[in-house]
Amino acid sequence: MMLKHNAAFLAAIMCVVHSAQAQSPKPVAGKIPIAARDLMRGTVLSASDIKWSDTTLTDGSVPEAASVAPGWVARRVIREGEILREPGVAMPDLVRAGDAVDVVYSTPGVSIRVRGTAIGRGRKGDDVYVKLDNRRRLHGIITGPNSVRVIQ
Image (cartoon, rainbow, N blue to C red; front, side, top):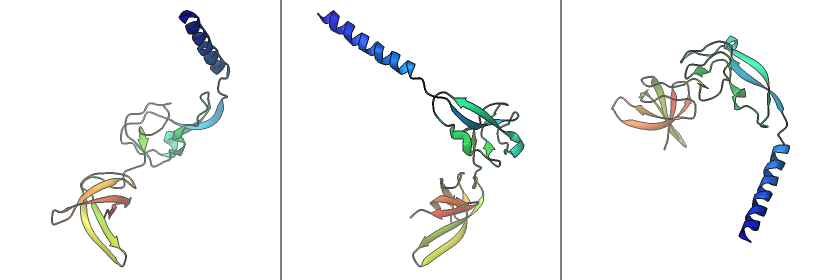
């Protein structure tokens, strides 16, 4: 009796799997950025480094890498023909460790701007610590090139 139930359950699973295989996803045409040449770590991408290739994806997804643009930086070695996507390539850091930065603290009616030194690195919107001349450390968010807004 138990064997019949197991066989029926197995047959039902096989039907579901077969049905899913029969309904293969429809191809999606899109353009993806690929490396036009070998890129070393730290290379700032130029328009000639990015080759846009037509592709057909069978999984129904659109590549995430469509936002890659000149000015982005290679974070690792990338071979010619490899798809350019994060984290292999990323927007450049706006603040690097050791950079002099404008530190802005503002509340309604009061805004204070002082110079400090970045302790970390990051892109727009990233958290970073900065050191003031009096050796006090503040936590902030990168708002632009060499500019940090203090988190209250």
